[in-house]
Length: 449
Image (tube, rainbow, N blue to C red; front, side):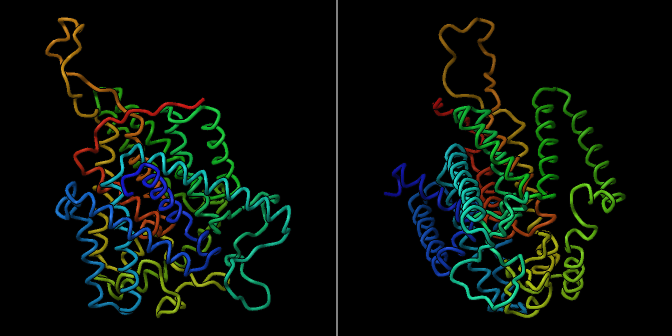
């Protein structure tokens, strides 16, 4: 059963949907239903790793990944909240297990297809859900299976705010405008690559691309706007690198642009925020960051203990950051969160994991695949004999790089890189780009017109 194409496709699609839209499960079938789904996915992941044990080993995994897992686990020894750390370590290991299984068992082609399917389900359901709320329910919708006190509830607790016809920001089935915006951003990446590689028909491909763009507009996420700009810059840089032989000039230009952008952000960032629809305090993030830094400096070397999601019933997270009456569950910045939880040691280890995955993704996108095997064609010209074959660049080789750029830019304003889809995609890319088959060319599947 594990090797059946239908089962493989269904498994990885459900896993990606669950990672990207966990609240859709939690709000509809409760935390217990969500937990059952996660356990089932983890069991299948372990079974796949056992089934394919000949194609991987613990020693083949990236050293920074192993160091991060060890550090997070042994932080139980000094954790200020050992119970929460044990829970965080468990969920982290489960997420990493799923990511390693996906990297070992599935090809880039299968992953791209499954990611596209999961994103279509999320975006399609989100629009249908918001339409149903606005046209039929006509009032805000609360998550199911949860009892709330009487009185006016904070907007952050609502599943849908019924703002579709007001221009948003909408939250969709994921119950969060930022998460929905990031899913739409991933949709732009995935649908764009599928169109460029003719893996989907033009009509269907452009329909979902336009829907993803519309969702981005309806979520009003400034972080996603900045990420789109970063992705456009990266695509231009890769295009130049692929076409020129004087790469040093391109790299110099990239360094100048990045340095200039960083300078502008540091000098004029506050004044530019209103242009992106953000307040000068980054929607309350500056206050949260200040509190997190104040706590992190008390244990700067090894942190307070790994926890992944902040547990709102545990000190100091129970009152560390509260916005509009809602206890926040992360620092809204990956790197401050790592510093808080695992200290400078964690920053070094996790930073090495992200940087190594980014570098290998860049190499995958800018270097040609290995020379194609097999003899030259019988009708090859004499001048071709002895000339190495140079396979063309593949569109799908851009996937890990674009995903990494999106994750890293997003990590400045969110902590999702440490959990659920963020950690999964990071580990997936880190493991798969390190494998021997990372640069193998992938053929396009037939297009349905």
